[in-house]
Image 1 (cartoon, rainbow, N blue to C red):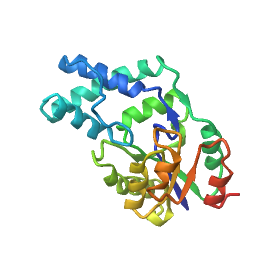
Image 2 (tube, one colour):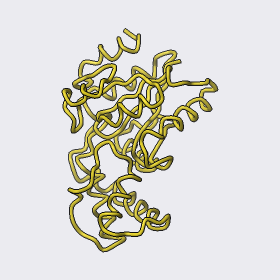
Image 3 (cartoon, one colour):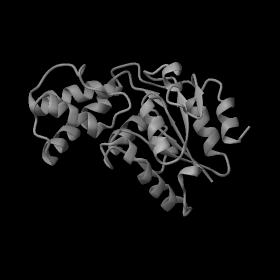
Length: 226
């Protein structure tokens, strides 16, 4: 069985910076701090890592309670912000997810820097959450390269099949996705639909690079489906 593990932001969807706006609102709501997140690295990072950057930047104590407060506020704002901008599913994505869902010997899950409830809010907004019965999330670790084993374990439990990295294809739009896949010995597919160009992604040696999913045939061929 082949396991496809998907990133979310910049790969499946573009949220038109809804997550960033929700983080800014949460920072103001919970800690009375206003301002942009221009000094915070967002693309490819986990929500927990992002929160830790924000806390360090503003000298907020990095405690369990503060993290919990911050994320609860963020989740409350996230759904609103998804309706406040041109958030969309990226071209061809829904068709690819549907094709893979109907393919024998193919399973799909998530390998994302989102916290689990944030991932659900985003993907339910676009009616694609149902394609992903399991995944690994920022709840599991702030360090993206530590997420892969959690996804493998959950997929193995769900399918009663012992997945290893050799069975996995990780799909994402940042160098961090490529590194995360390589960390578990997975094949990596980079898609240049986020903030990184195809040329920058190529420098990290993915096994396949796509401009987008408008023409998914190279992806299907890579998976042995076409």
